[in-house]
Each structure stands twice: as C-alpha cells, then as structure tokens.
Length: 160
Image (cartoon, rainbow, N blue to C red; front, side, top):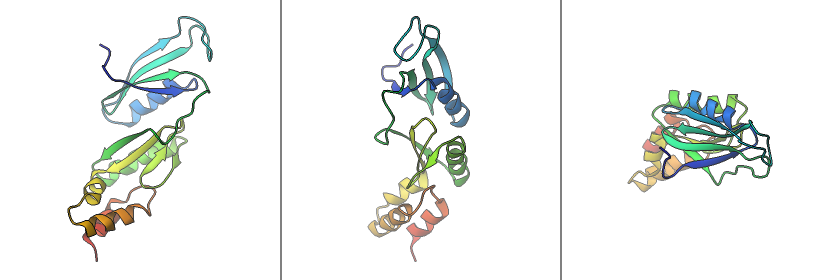
C-alpha cells in the first residue's frame, strides 16, 4: 500500500546506494523495493534504477534517480533523536566515515548531500528546560560543538 505522505529525495543515479546505507545504519529502516525504468528518461536508460522505496527510522521515503539538475540543501534534514552518547557517536561516525561532512550543532551531511541532525534527547530537553538560565547554558554549549557531547550538555545545564 502506498503511504499517503512519502518523502521524495532526488539522487543522481545513487538512490539505491543511499537507501542501502540508510537501511544498514538507522534503526527501523529498510529498502522495500527497487523499480527500474520502463523506458529511457532524461538521466538514464530503460532498465536503470529509477526509484527506490525505503524507510528511515520508520518514515517512508522514495529515492528518485532524477539526475544532476537538483542538489540537496540544509533546508531539508532528517533529525534523529538518540538515547545516549554511544548511539550518537555510532550514527554520527557512520555518516562521516562513509564520505559525509561534519557541521555545527549536531548537524552533518551524508555523501549524497542529505543533511542529518544527530540530536540526543538530552539536548532537546536541556534547551527547552523551564529554567531559562539552564536552557541558555545548554544552548551556548551546543553552539560550540560539531557532534553533540552529552556530558558537556548535562554539565552546562547544571551550571557552575
């Protein structure tokens, strides 16, 4: 059954590689189907992979091999909530070690240009703390980080 809402991600011939990586890396993720083009299309030939149906952490997606015309930007990202530093490190490192790039405040970009926010639940709780001073300390600590360090966020939240 086709989902009512599916995220469609544009790739330049690498949708299957990306979907396989996501399925290996993120929990509750899988490749459901690979569809080949029934005819030639602007960026490929009959029989080439045209679309790939997959899920990322339970979210239905489709990868479209649409060619080089459109590139991904940070305007779209997957935000993955992590439960501890081990999970944060594992997911962050999987993306970076597979040709990705680190960015600021828990953001990174995979080798296909998709942006990811690897966000520990502790961080989300800290920057929304009902104590404005604690929230600000945690926020200021986050602003200095690339990959999020949970111990440093917790220390900042507690304060001096």
